[in-house]
Length: 234
Image (cartoon, rainbow, N blue to C red; front, top):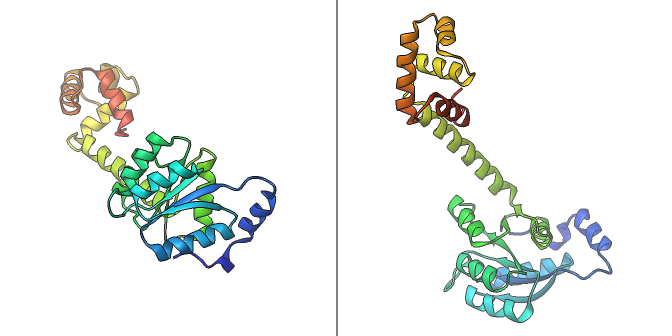
């Protein structure tokens, strides 16, 4: 749950003071849990956000947004009827000026990916502080993106692991000697140079290069060099 209203940071309070005199951001809150929705609305208003509407499901969200034209929709994902993903997709089509900030309990990569592909420009978690939600609303309203730090950390780690896995798979079938040849190939070395540096014959170099091209499924040594650099094989 969110931090209590008494825990709102001085930073948020200062931002409220600085924005005095300007129009507050207009927001619609969409969540099927009425108790949570009411608490969120109360905290958002205390943080200087103008909540102009609320909805318990995706279908009602489409109607409320059409009636109020908010700056931002704070959207839950798992709701009865039209899901948050589908509602986001339809809102992007019908109300392109309104931005969508997903607020959910799910840090699942598939949910994050689906939400972003559907058109959401922010993704924050319900167990984070209210300051994070307010920051997300302000960011998406300004045309920027904000992803919860925990989700971002998870996704970056997954990307690193995927990259390492792809790299390992790409070079899994190359022998140590072939990797040495490939490294020199990527440096632009000619066959006779590779032979001299590795103390092998040029015919052996040619055999290694043929094997490398076959294993990497490329047609020539230039493509092999590009693949080596792109997949971090050398």
